[in-house]
Image: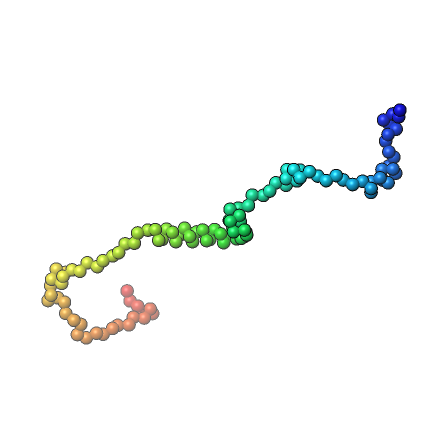
Length: 113
């Protein structure tokens, strides 16, 4: 019986055997353990495609949508003019049409305030 020390192969014998050696196939569970399936975002699962948008563009769109939602969600105030009869505001005697209209043009160089 040979001792275990004599079972070793020399470097030359190992180099000669190495090209003939075929590696066994890795089990399928090993690949899934090392490389797990990446979870896809919901929009990619629904539409089947991905859309890449730069971060500043996405932030700008989000801000615009928030401003639009705020603008359209605030109640609109309708201002109505209050009609005051002439007799209450001033006497009818004080209101007269302009007889002669003389517009005065004031230029910025000649402006006197």
